[in-house]
Amino acid sequence: MNCPHCGAPAPANARFCQECGGALQVTCPQCGQPAMAGTRFCANCGARLDAGEAAKAAAKPGQAQFFPPPPPPPMTDAGEAPQASAFPPPPPPQSLEPAANRTIVAPPPPPPSPVAAPGPARQAPPVPPVGPEPVAWQPPAPTPWAGVQPLPPTQYEYKGILPRFLAVLIDSALLVVIGMAYNMLLIQQAGSLDMTLYSILQFGYGAFTLLYYLLLEANGGTLGKRILGMRTIAAQDGGRPGIKRALVRGLMLIVDFLPVFYLAGILSIASSEKKQRLGDRVAGTCVVKA
Image (cartoon, rainbow, N blue to C red; front, top):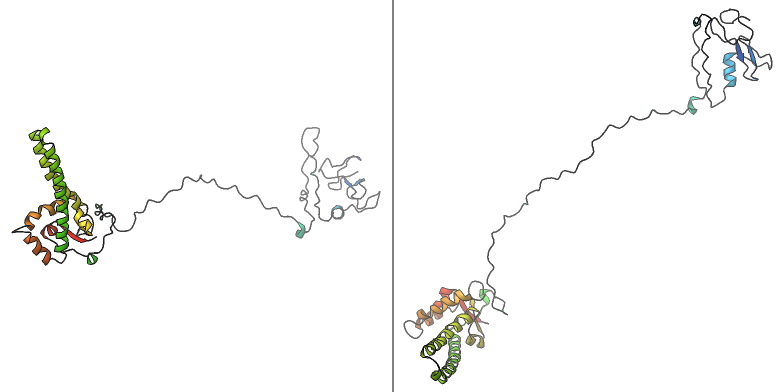
């Protein structure tokens, strides 16, 4: 048997040519029986052995036809590989599936670039508040007389000479009664008291009289004013006069009594819109209806 490719003689049972490495036998695609290369039809079943037709007949719709790679060429006795065939190698098998039915596999996407781990969020610097500048602290206004809400100056009913004179009479009568009882008690205890202690106790009544006017006027008026429905207020805010105003008002009584019998005080009250005597004007107080 000769090689159909190069014409070199080859054994009967050989499958490949020892000279060019070409295939000497082919397999029938129908019955699988071997046949000589170059034979167009199978001697067993009569199927066509042409390479192109056999490939088309063997291929099924929707499947790709693959051919195993040829075995390596046999080595010669001298240990050298046979010479390369003059014929070019067959092209790689192609899929016979229609292009519309092929599944195109996209290449995998590239790996994502490394990104730095997010750090803590940066906070914006605080924005200074927009508005008026802070006002310096100021002491609270004096509290109005207990139980009475301050009224606007135009709604006060100022008390004149007669009501205030009657209030002085009531206060004087109370102080006289208290003084008489106090003196009677001292007289009863005079025999058992030391002269020094007796003099101190006599001075105590004068101190009581001063504290009576000072403390009661500082809190809104004496008992005589309250009995007649009057009260003494601060002319600025209508609150209680306080110790300072009451002290100034009491000391100014000396000036109000000048020249005789409270004449300066009477003239000051008569000429004042708010019925204020000289002591009221200096201390900033008024006598109004409670």
